[in-house]
Length: 147
Image 1 (spheres, one colour):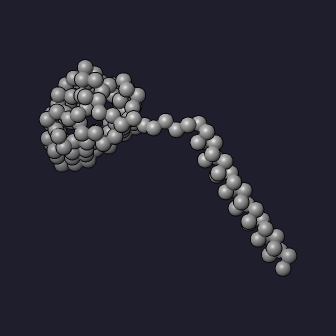
Image 2: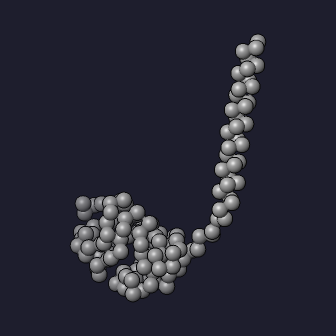
Image 3: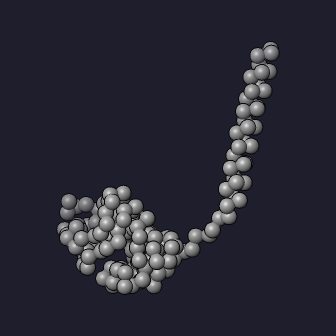
């Protein structure tokens, strides 16, 4: 596994990152920890990942405050090139393509709140389209049977 350059550990119910998990993976460029339940990261867990350029923490309950992942935040400050995706649990906001170096300052992108009536409008529009297609098909079939 020393030649491994991409690793997807998404959707594995991982609750924490252990210090020795990535030892010997110096060529790893892309790491996905998407959709787990990661709430702890042991210090120095990512030290061997010297070529890492993509780190996906999407759908994990990450605490964005520096005290939440103090060692991780410190490690990330020296990796300007890494892009992080994740969820800021303390701010209830999405982190999308945020430079990891700004992670400790909780750089987030607030998701716009969609009003409930918008879902009714979209659903109603879909129903109208389906009914229109059914009527057109029924009308054409009726017309072809008459001939």
